[in-house]
Length: 151
Image 1 (cartoon, rainbow, N blue to C red):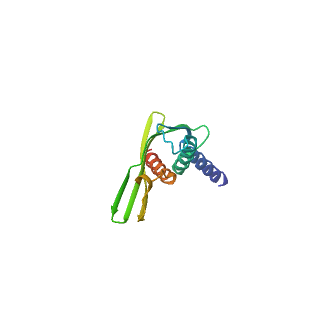
Image 2: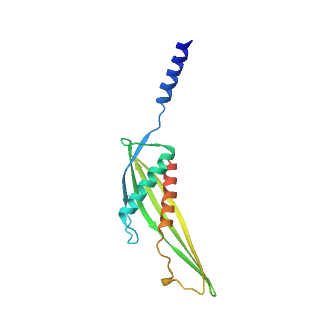
Image 3: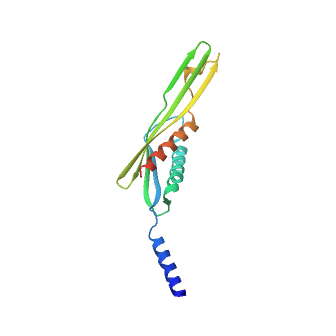
């Protein structure tokens, strides 16, 4: 009886070990966007960390895993301004488009984040909101979640 129990336990462990998830490693983050508001090194480092975090929710991360490349294709930040008498509302949407390249497969993602400023009897300099790092980070995270979700 003990031998049967040990044999069943061994079979279970062997079968559980063969159903491992694929392992990934973020090897390269590049950007085709030139934005003077952000330092490229900090952006690349932050995107690498976010990619590893989001990938690790569904997949394993390891040193010798399948290489994953992240390429930021565009960063757009259109703004709209609405005024009614002394009241003003300015809204800026940060849109980030990126792709993940894993082997020969490509996965695309797009993320958006909003910043809104409301004012009374106050004018913004040049009617433009400054670049918001938090909105950029939120948009990148949403784009990565979308791209990883396609995997």
